[in-house]
Length: 249
Image (cartoon, rainbow, N blue to C red; front, side):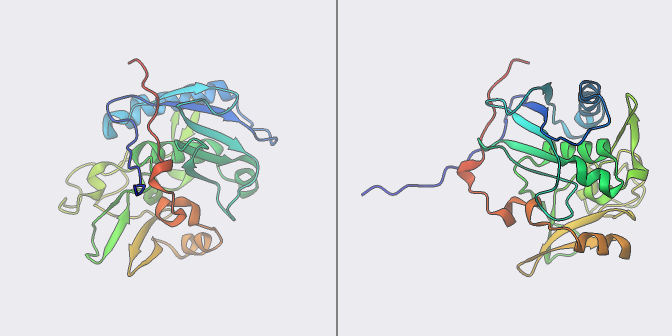
């Protein structure tokens, strides 16, 4: 009798993924989506790629595109308190969900939240990367924007605010303070530093938790359901994690 084995796959090795960008929200975006998509593409190509080496082609669509990743705008968060998070498409490809009404009600920036999820999706598409850090008994999530999460740190691309994000050097514990650049805006001075509006997801003693730099951020995170933010918590089976269709370069 043959037994089935889990299928372990990888995202986009040696190819450039397409990301379908589409709107399913009834709440007005308040921006031109075509212009915003162009700005996100510039953000990826000019800012993220030179640092992380994670190119992508963003395309405007009316819905999910076969073989493509996705970035979708929805109305209200399906996880309490979440402004946006990355998940998987129905076909098992990386997906960023951005909740337009929830963001508006919170008084946050739609473009910052969107670019936040986009850069994190590019750096850790399966939402399962972890690394060692200051605490030898803990594992730190490879989230590219969480430690510098704050609208005040955003920078302008084609008239739209984009999130600050950390560099690979941020996770290199051997680096000395001010020895190199640790984030795009140059606000982080040392590895694993968390700025006032940021946080870091850690796994320790069999439990997930958040490290913050401020009491206000800690209180805000308690109001938010974080279960959707890591694939280990959602228990996404490996066979659901697909590889994108090969596209010409």
